[in-house]
Length: 325
Image (cartoon, rainbow, N blue to C red; front, side, top):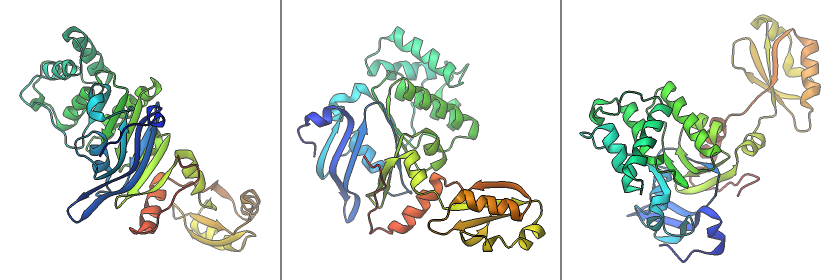
């Protein structure tokens, strides 16, 4: 249920406190706390079935929470609908309508005049590289093109809050890049964006902060760069000129090296450092022991963090990274 908003809620785009939702015997969302600051770009991450879409549907007032407090732009999402843009996970356009007619119709539902809506439609079609489709029927477009049209429908009215549920799913790399750039531009313009995705590479590129949920529970809430720093492995990757040279160097015996594992190529080896070892010192020892084609501190990806935390969580333990909001 939605309770009376507090002064604190008015400073946030989205606020959830102890929100829960159950479908029969399945607890889809468990006592979820989430704060989305105005002007931020937040990634809501998690594996399939984690509760991301349920959380978004509650934020959009498509379904009501069973418990907790939920406010959107300081009030109820139903009262703020003209200030919100929403791209749902379930794609859908009016297939028999022409693209221009469909988008102008959506714009007018959001309070735009017909002439203003037409101007914005033309600009957006150009902006996301959909030239020449204004008079095409939606059903004549490819699924990727329909998805881009629906993205325009979500942002055409310049909403204060944009909620995107799996916006890049099913897009080829070229069209995914076009939408990524559009999302990035909207964020620069000051829009608040809540992005739900299970594609970690896009989240890593775009998001100021990431919130990871698994089995309905929040297990991570932190600044993206802080996450990557906190979970960075204490490891160095060494790539030699050939595999035989690598084997003969006995790099596992270097000072500060606790263990080794296979690297990203047959000629490379990852040196896992012991607690307290100085990576720069170990790199200097490696350089003196072998001719290196490449020597670098191993980098963690958001995908690595995702897999590790979801595996460790196992539906039981809760984990919060430093810098959580």
